[in-house]
Length: 169
Image (cartoon, rainbow, N blue to C red; front, side, top):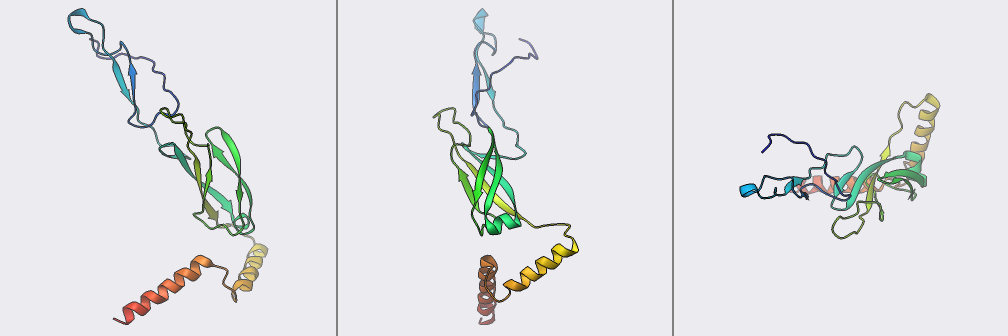
């Protein structure tokens, strides 16, 4: 019996945390000089900087520009096999989920490949110059008479109902 020993173990694609890999002949020595048993290596995945894994599906956040969210367009998103184009429809809101089929992890058991699910996050422009700020103020004023903010409109209606309900008690 050795206290420490290094061995190489092939990790097949698609393994997940808590999966075990069996390595024959690398375990404890057998009884009465018998062959060594098997070594079981339990997998623990490190967190990834971009992707979160859920079974065979991968999840990621994808930032999109304000203008792309409003007007629609196309962005590039990372996958484990390179970048792919993702079409963004006009009037996309933060939190919108987009599924890209077959860009997840291939299951080690079934052979099925999961999907990549992108959650878009609309970025607020920063470090605007005075002209950009002026244009944005003019744009904002043009929206005041119409209901162009579905989440705000719904939130304000809920807020009014909330105060009405607690005021009536």
